[in-house]
Image 1: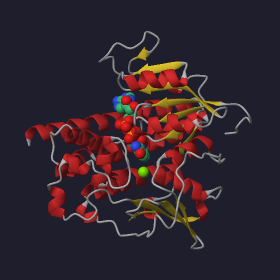
Image 2 (image 1 turned 120 degrees about the horizontal axis):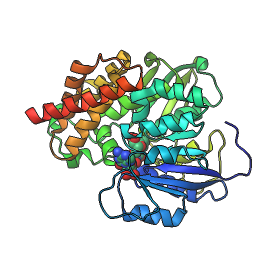
Image 3 (image 1 turned 180 degrees about the vertical axis):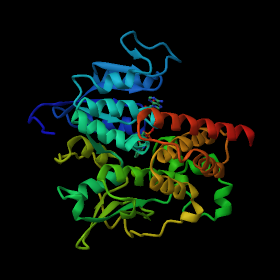
Image 4 (image 1 turned 60 degrees about the vertical axis):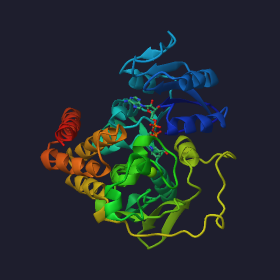
Length: 384
Ligand code: NAD
Ligand code: MG
């Protein structure tokens, strides 16, 4: 995509009231003349969304849910709000910061419409990576990752070809249970799981970071973004979250991208890639203050959600969509206090055993696999 010099680019921020959405609005506000907000969407009405509208003066505000306080008459309400926002003519970049498979249609529609999708909503790619690639090819859109690990990989790759790459090394903080015994992890509470050591994020991804399901989602995301086989994508635990990921090239050289654990830079870079722009609001890195940097092997046996996700990735077809949907449903139940921590992985395991070999080439079959996995997890939770 070529950037027309000097023109401010319109950004649709989907999921504007969330952790990434609010970060994105802060980042955009620091770049007047370069980016401006043209659309905002959120799940439900809130005072935060109203204040975001007042601050950014977008031409479109959309809500998915009609429940709650009556919104202004100018706001659009309904399931089509995300796609409407993502495909508007005044939108150049769609920042998809919706959580979960609910972001899929907007990503696909934006890519078909030739937009840049700055993608935080990794569940979209996990569920339907091939459909996203096909939508890019048809419509001329592109995906630029917001996830910090994938932003790091993109920055390390520069203009190099994937044939120059031997291995991607994705770092993981290890989450709140990195040093816990398996027995203690089994008894973890919701409060324990929500206490992330290095990142402040939405509740779903925070739980995913405690089970390490998030790293499985990220390995699949990397596979689709960068076109590398799963044998060439590894995970290493790095408790300080300073090295955001690494790329090993065929000559043995390893490049890493570093910085303080903050989403401000990955969000900004997803908007400006391949350019870099000055932003004094991004927290500065002090190597001495952040030392030492350490690395550990990942405890695959003690974090079964990661192992299950990696197995689903290799199976392909609908298995990643089943993994993702089972995880989303189990995490939702865990967040409601209706499921134990250890049952998240057990639910995913059971759903994959039953549904993991469903076919998954087209959207209809992927949506069917997604729905079946959610129903499987709910039914199992009812029985237990
Ligand atoms: P969040 O829960 O804080 O925010 C989610 C946003 O999406 C909110 O605006 C909410 O209103 C909206 N939303 C929720 N359900 C929706 C639905 N069904 N339809 C439409 N809108 C809906 O989540 P977050 O932490 O900002 O994460 C957003 C995405 O970014 C996730 O996919 C997450 O994995 C990814 N991500 C987040 C971080 C982070 O630091 N928070 C880092 C990397 C990737
Ligand atoms: Mg990440």
